[in-house]
Image (cartoon, rainbow, N blue to C red; front, top):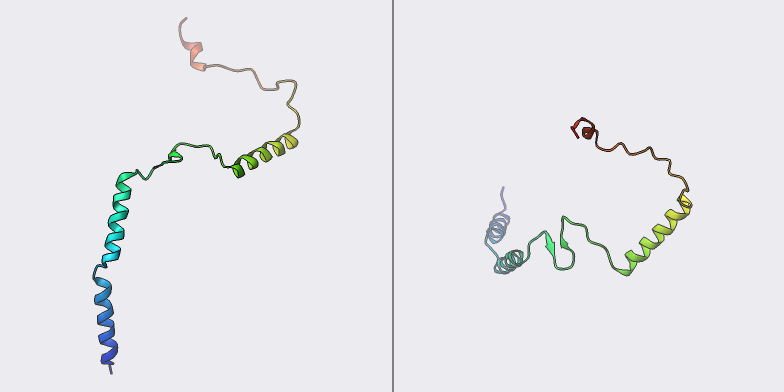
Length: 98
């Protein structure tokens, strides 16, 4: 047997959830207005999101300095001779008339 109190409560709660809430609508409208003001890919502090930006906070600067020092210790001093092969240049340049 179905309990009429449970059915009534379920229907009441379902109807309340389906109705739009004024606070949610106001919040949504405010968010849409902000989204139109500033593009999502650009912030006022970093510029476009598809371009790198230096991290200038003190913690990042300290971490970068520590990383450079660690790399210098691991790699040792710079080499005195260049062991790379000579540059080959543009291979298509040999086929072009001078």
